[in-house]
Amino acid sequence: MDPSFRDAVYQIVAAIPPGAVSSYGAVARQAGFPRHARFVGRLMSQLPKDTRLPWHRVLRGDGRIALAGTPAGDQQIQRLLDENVTVLGDRVPRQHFQQW
Image (cartoon, rainbow, N blue to C red; front, side, top):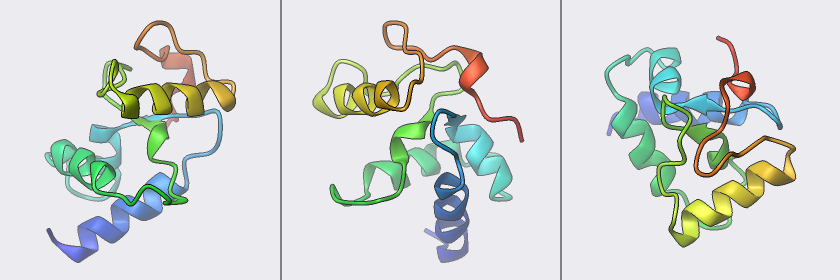
């Protein structure tokens, strides 16, 4: 994977404030690679467990938790709830999405 893309994704994700979320596609667009949403997801899934990067703030474009029903999905939901993000089932309402 192109290191410049990876670095741009990490910077964008790091800038998502607590209480807000973004989508894989929006992060890819901000990084200058509008058709690389899946690569953003791959980068998030490859982060070490002790990362400080707020990977939990990146969701599918429809607001759904991509890994809902798995331990990683449960962890993501809990982290979002800890930041006062509303989670309804496996989805975060649009009001929490960061506007670019």
